[in-house]
Image (cartoon, rainbow, N blue to C red):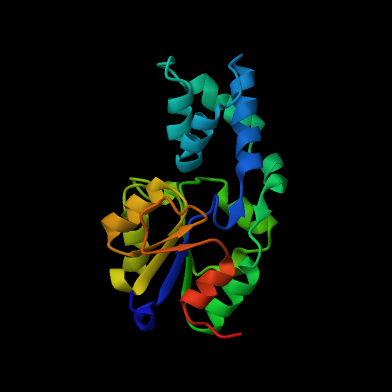
Length: 210
């Protein structure tokens, strides 16, 4: 990885920008309980963490051919009340400010859909990113590379000028297929160009001084 050529730093949301484990678990548990199903198992939780909501519901309700009732329940429950359970990653704001000060494009590529805007608004992060691409903005969510390709196209970036920071196999595969550098966040088991455990390590990786 030639750090001098990096122009953009793209983040996944869940598990990178925020610890969303409690929020997502509470959300899906409430949906499951509404249909008299048991709460998420650990395996189910790991899988839905990577998926879009639509993919997750199909995965959690394989016995249903018609999911209209489930999606209606989702809308009624809403995600807004779970956002306070999301914990912003330590050091994130400082890193984002330093990235801007050093001229990097700051972006998000997430399999969230219509909740991302509210998450940014509620956490006063709307002005901290030059580009946000969700699963709603593309035909094919991660692990497809479309989100990353869309960002690169928008800013006329080459793959070697981009690092994508993620925490799942979907993120890893998306980066690999897009040709960008992949930084695994708190998941050393993932095949990555670099593995980090904190935002400060990303700052050090990019050789950004205090």
